[in-house]
Image (cartoon, rainbow, N blue to C red):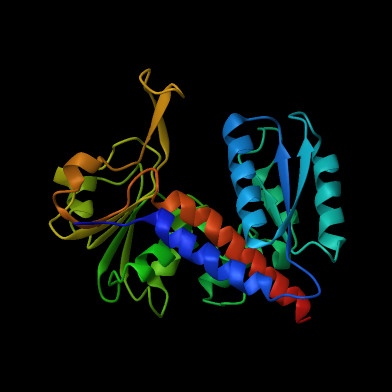
Length: 291
């Protein structure tokens, strides 16, 4: 069984991007982060993204707002960044407070600066297999893991566990598309799926993104399966300095003996999400330069 090292693959992508950006002479890519509130996870995620951008040579600009920011104030900031020719990518750190409509907020970002791939136009381009759009970073990272690990998808049965706008739906579209990785027969399962284990046991490739710790167990998969675990769940653990430990949606200890490929948590899909955000930002920079 091969444990897919997301850290190593993400590091390879970061080195490729660093080399590419170092060749830019006149200007460097710029990504703007918008963070609302002081949620510890959001603070940590944005800080990590900023550090990675700095390593590559991408300039990052952080815009902070209080938890009670109005939609108008937030949208004004997004509009300002949309019209700023020096800004190539805009990322709004989710989740947002409940009084803010996430879909409307994501759609406020200009599609050509939507490096998170959440704008309706970019999602539509994904449906139409239009490569000019931006793909959401986590599904893009899943595809890159599959590609660089040389996992076959053509003609195989890919089961996606979860139907979120951020992971499940775009991951299913990517696996269905013409090309590689892709050309797969895709089944999407969710909380209303009946007899779920009978479907997951059919999977040649299982993408688990349901948000429930250790949900997928060994009796739910077949021998030789490739499992991509997207879940990041915090379980209380007083033996840890942080007071918690991270686990995925897959019970590693029971699934590993049956799998040919398996991503760990942490160190699997997570690092890829950040790497793909940087890749999208560099692409946005090229788009702006070529206009």
